[in-house]
Length: 110
Image (cartoon, helix red, strand yellow):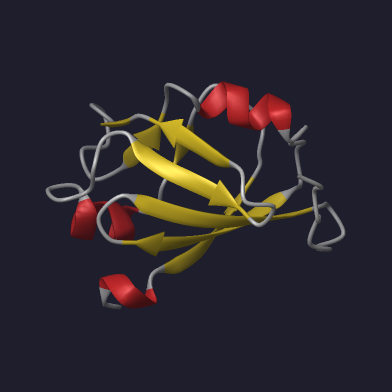
């Protein structure tokens, strides 16, 4: 299993992710005891977002971003098929690069 310093992963925008998005189980298992809540997500344009998370009841090994996620989703006009490369920096930061449906990184202005 990768160390926290190596944790980078893609999340695909699929149907029903406008209100919440699940993190990978391997990542969730490793960080759920020590990750800050809320976390800060910084985009490549330097904008930061505060996102709260919960552990799913039906899948106790999955962190789900909830409060603040919809505002992030709408602000960046995320659509089905887009991807995000998330890079975790223990204990409270994520850097995210958003890619369109053709896998081109989107460079949002400030």
